[in-house]
Length: 101
Image (tube, rainbow, N blue to C red; front, side, top):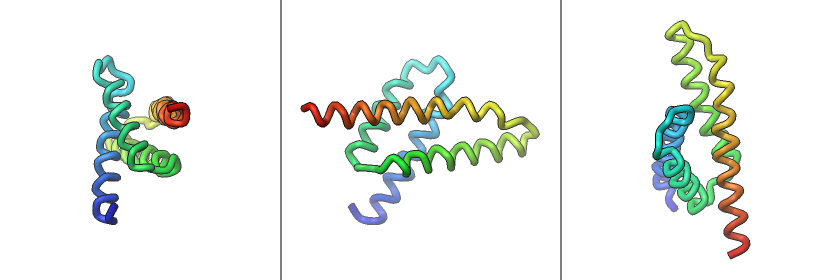
């Protein structure tokens, strides 16, 4: 994978993860599919876990800045750690499943 391809993939993953974060605490019926698609892309591209955590932290920082600009508290963003835990658990399951195939 070329450097440009990897950058494009990382941007797409960040965009996909942003949608997961935005919809995580809603009643979005397609959220599980979005998470599965994200995990499949991460797994197939062999993206390391620290990079997923970096994507998460970057997005949370962007959301925090936006909330502060709006004069709102960013305290609720702490709940989005659950999203990261959920995504990493799905990724662990993908790795576990691949070992036993």
